[in-house]
Image (cartoon, rainbow, N blue to C red):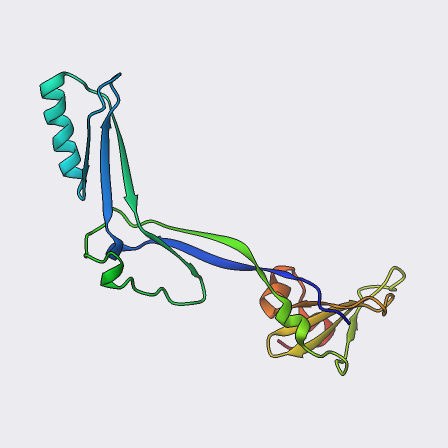
Length: 176
């Protein structure tokens, strides 16, 4: 049976890297002024803007803050940024962390041999439309099939994916 592509959801986290530092920029947006200032602290940009306003009367500015962020798999520890990659110990004014999901290739589940797997039916009724079958194929791996279509290859899932889908192996008489 040929291996097909399967995509799995994996949680990732993005967070600020303190060692990478922060760059603050402020720009005067008064028509044709072009005044700006770059610093590593917000206060330095604010002081420049106040001096610029006192000198020119311009009172509208655009500020930007640039930092370094690291994306990590939620299950793996966050590595530290080495000093040669921008470390410097500057502090970040607030703690920011966002989480999300992306799809990751899950073909490893389809590399597991299921020729000897023992599929069990779970029926809540007379099974006139078809029955779902489930087999444990590894420590954290399951195969889900259809007894009415035995020629169709079973789908493969991790224990976590089964739980998210609302499929309880106990309903099949299997333990997690």
